[in-house]
Length: 389
Image 1 (cartoon, rainbow, N blue to C red):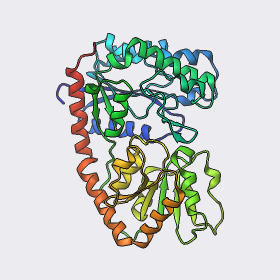
Image 2: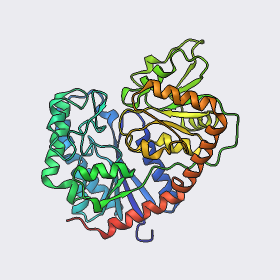
Image 3: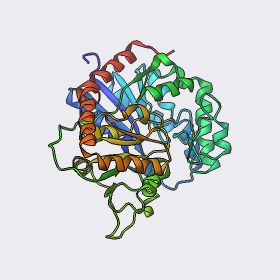
Image 4: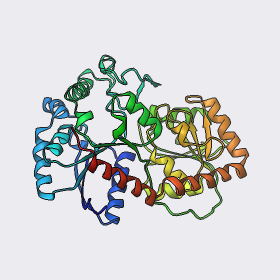
C-alpha cells in the first residue's frame, strides 16, 4: 500500500478485554509487519467504571475533549487513513467530523450492531429482536435495552437519532467493514449505503497444529446468557461420561460446579497461548450463542487449530459453520438438540476429526493472515477513492 504509509487506529477499549480488543491488536500487528507506521488512539471504559457523570451523557453524543485531542494527534502524525473500531462511549461520533475537516479518509469496522440496536446485540429477553432495524430505536428506549437503564438507554438513543439526523453514518464514513455476508445484509436493511460496505472476516495467525490425541469438548467465551452458556450446562447435566473444559468469566460463572466429581472443568480466564493449547487437545468446541454473533474470534481460532465447531444455527454462525463439513449445527436454545449433536460427535471420533481437518482447510483458504491483509488493503484503497459527501 504505497499510498498508505501512516495509519491511525481509533478504538474505545472495553472494561473487560474481549474478542473485539484482540482483533484490534491483531490488525495493528499485521499492518506493522507489512511496514506501515501505525498509531493507536484509544480510550478505555475502565476510566468511567460506575460513574454517573452527566457529562458522560453528552460526551457519548459529541465529545469536544476527544475532538481536540484527535485534531492534535492528526496534525502531528498526518495519517493517510483513519481506521475506527469503536467510538462508544468516550470517543463519540465527533471523530468522523474531525477526520472530514482534516480531509482524512475513514474506515469503520462494524464489530457489533450498535448503529441499529441500543444493546448492540439485537437481543431482548434472551430472544432475537430486530424491532429497531431501519427505524427510530424508541422501542429500545421504552424497554431500557441498555443495561436495563432508561438513562443509559437514552444516551445511546440520543447518539443514534442525533447522528442519523445529521447524516453522519451515511456521509462521513468512506468505507464500512462488515464481518460476514449476513451482517452486511442487516446493516443495509438498517440504512447504511450498500456501496460503502465491504466484507472482511476476522483472522488469527496460528501455525498448523501438530496432530495429538484429542478428547473432550471445549467452551471458550463469556459466561453469559447471550452466549448460551446456560444451555451448554443444561445439556451436560447428568452426562458424566462427557468431559468438558470451560474457559472464560462472566455473570453465569456460578453455573460451573466446583467439585472434583463433576464432568465440567472450570479453568477461568486464560491467555491466548493457553487457550490454543486446549484447542489443540480438545475433540470439538461448542458455541451455543442465542444472539447473532457477528464473527466470533473463537470460531476462526478453532478452525486454525483443526477444531470442529458445534454451534447454534443462528445468524452468521449458520453460515460460518458448514454443517457436516467443518462442524455441526443445532437448534438455537435447545439443550436437547445440543446434547444430541455432542453425543454424535463423541460417538463418531473419526468423522469429527475429519471435520477438524476441513476446518483447518477453510482457515487456510479464507481466514489466514495474507488473505486478510489483501482484503484490508483493497478496502483502504476504496476509502481513498470514495470521497465523503
